[in-house]
Length: 623
Image (cartoon, rainbow, N blue to C red; front, top):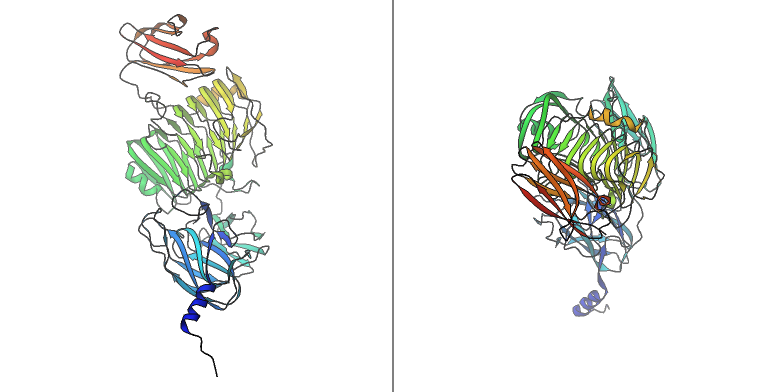
């Protein structure tokens, strides 16, 4: 006769042996995320949280081992900002177990909550758990994965990867690949074959793996997304393009930069025109003419050309934003006085961008923090060329990577050539983590120029530096950067000691003799727009404190006899800088510490005097 176990004894037994296991990111049992481990939103536990990229099928996976054949409870702690849910499907051991797992929005990314409990039967052994996004926006932010049941252990991950192959235009060509599976083990070889339709050719494969070959084999080591990029026969790249914008990896794999030329050519005269065409999902070659003024942002999506075709193609106070876009050309455009945002921002993993024959400026009448940057390149944006452009009258000019913690920006690759940097304070550019090739540029009357930081590599060659306090340096970060220097011409300029690097670029170029640059560049860049002038006298200097150079700037609203003098802390005159009649306008004087004689003071005074006006400011010497 069977002996019955009292119910309370059964419940006690179950409670004793049931357990709760939490797997955090970067721990045993956490296997992969199609994205990154992030820390930018507060409220998480552990070291951070898993943040997927946008896209259907983006996934996070874990691996666990269980000792019993029984039903287990799955719970995820997550957050989703905005109004849209980001549901997923549950896959266990490569089999879809539940078509839709609901993850409702938490409205704010800081509102962390646990999901509803999901009951899943597992047999004893090791299991790969994966959730895959059903939304174009990917998954939410996932803080941890909790499992409740008997005998649970986080397990060493067995690799299993997905492959997603597509084409940029199915009417231009198709593809095939082998072997075809839902999931692949690490080390599996996959062969892709491109099949262009009549009238088209394969330009390249883009994505996780890159190639210009029609038949291409690679080995899987992670989840793979590759696109076959077809173009019409006869498509050619502008022969004036030099540098990173025309390639897509450090091997030099070609990416034919077309911008919007495969699409319709349209005329734009208004802000609404520019927003409509440049923000469209279709390719457009946008011809802009005129002057627009405001406080607005124009977003530019993939496969666009914005080209100025008039005598003045001017955006005043209006930002251009390239975010998560590829294959963009911006040419013959003037942008100025944009605040509080950047004049041009390249963000969100944008790639293959060419900025050519443009002008960027603000003024120095409002102080160092009034304007942000003229050009920012950040958040893994890469393969960018900036050429034959004029950057002037600005404090914080070009920033590449936005912070010392942005390690993912090691992928950034930028070329600067034949640009004119005039009367800029700093960041020409300031670069963290990535690599920049800087050749045949003309720098004039700038305090500091190239700042390599946080392990960045820069190749600086055949540039002309005139009246630049620090032409190349490595300052203001926790870790220094590196530079390799060739044949740069220095006129009243200095290069600080920077550790070297062995940096070769993967494309062809020809560097001109730097001594001819002032003439050819000043005669070729845009200088069509006059600066705004303040309505009253002004006097300021930057940097302040300084050592060894500072720039004293002043404005005369009318013709005047001018005295500009330096005094020591006791009021003794040390130096007369200006003693002459000057016409209305902006003026600047570069003051060197050597002009102050043997004075040991750390404090000086600069006084501007005219027949109607005088002003005195302090100058602090940095020792």
